[in-house]
Length: 244
Image (cartoon, rainbow, N blue to C red; front, side):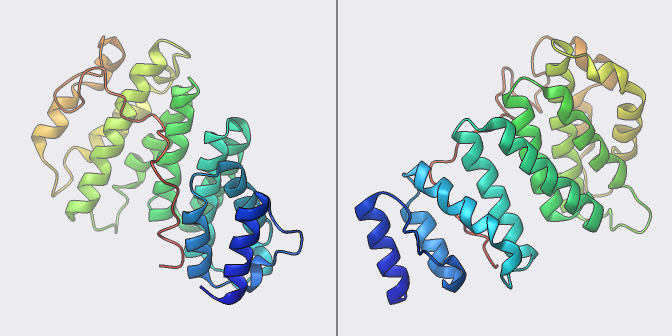
């Protein structure tokens, strides 16, 4: 770490607060990584640092590969700190901006879709996650897309599995799946024949029309009473993708 970064870290650890004259804009990205990792167990301080970094993002030369992971990490830290509405609002803003600019199959958009879905599920609104996964399935068969890769088939099945869970969970809350049943059936049917996928996986998900009626998470593709799809706090906060 540079001397400036070392001095800042010492000040933070001694005072348990952020120095008023802290200039994050002058810090190297690797130093920011280290600072975040070292403060991983001090959530209030980490939250303050991430808020500061997010507030200056437009004043720096940082590009999307830096800004998006920063926003994603801030969303998770806010959610863990029980600022759930703020975390969801920020995640929605990032997701829709990425979706508008890059499309829903861009890796950053897919990451934010999964994060948003896990937030919705964790607060008891699984129906809000349904359009996220449905749209991925609808767009993944877009003409011109290389649908023959194993990655595309895997992404499709992963989101189909999350879509099924969202439908099952929403059956007991808002009934959102029933309202969107036709669109969901079309999305799943379009992906079932993707090259590179395994027919057995899709058959284990069962008919879409029966998803809501299954009493459990259903099928060997999704373990019974699965917590899959819920947001879980990581063991350690890291900023590993920063600038990569």
